[in-house]
Amino acid sequence: MKMEIRIGSRTLGQGHPAYVIAEAGSNHNHDFEMAKALIKAAAEAGADAVKFQAFRAEEHYSKHTPGFTYLKEQGHQESTYELIRFLEINRDWHAPLIEYAKSCAITFLSSPCDKEAVDQLGNLNMAAFKVASFDLPDIYLIRHMAKYGKPVILSTGMADYADIKAAIQACLHEGNENVILLQCTSLYPAPAYLSNLAAMETMRKAFDCPVGYSDHTTGDHISLAAVALGACMIEKHFTLDRKLSGPDHGFAIEPPELSEMIRKIREIESAIGDGIKNGPLKEEKEMFEKGRRSLHTKRAISAGESITRDDICIKRPGYGISPHSLESLIGMTVCRDIPEDHWITWEDIKSR
Image (tube, rainbow, N blue to C red):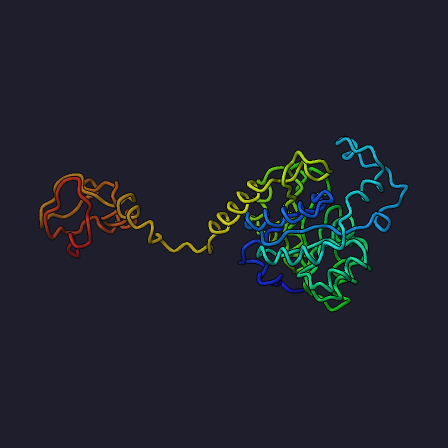
């Protein structure tokens, strides 16, 4: 498996900035102009990619599928099949939306849920494929995506080790090692306490591939925590307005919030640093000199006198000898007058 993967012009993996996907999903509400507005807003917010979903109700859900509780609680009384049919994207939009995304300098991605959608998007040279958590068991769909040689992003909500391994093996069967795993909780919205961000490291060690987080919680704080824990990718549901009608608007973030989340992500990444502890930073020089403690005189000491323990105290600033050397300083002879309450330097001292 590859630990570094390229999607378009961006490299993903440890040591690289997290790849941020604004998950538009079906929040276009069957409106082409709204889909374009989502792309533009995601680009302006600084996202690396904007992602939609390509499904067809007839191939996606049985007509006999019971309704989901969370959808009924939102007021959706129609059958699951009818709701999914309403949320379908017009596949004629794909080509113009991909071109529009290019003009906005953002990558267009999609979760294709059937082979026809995979082929259409693959032939349009889409930069990567995304597999929704619900589709993870469909290794035949995953193999079909993997044939195109593009990175395959696997969401792992509800999955166990065997599910994830089988999906990865489906990619490897087609010679595709460009796999990214996303920790995910398949609830809408998902409570923070079920996020299980520690699973990212578990999957990274188990499968030796880049790992990120697909976030269904409200707010941005869990995504930010995921970045601090090493997520190479963040996928966050995104809408133009949470008040719009549709199942995924209510828990999504709006454009100003997406922009702020990305700003915080980049700030967190800059704060992680290289882990090396090697003394003061150049920016800390003044604090190091004036704020650290060093050895000072309790009384005025004249040239030729020997220093006793009672002559020394430890206080700021740090211009003097380090407190670590206090014991070795005792008994040494002063070679020049040192005022009371003044730091002691090695230039003030003669050897024994």
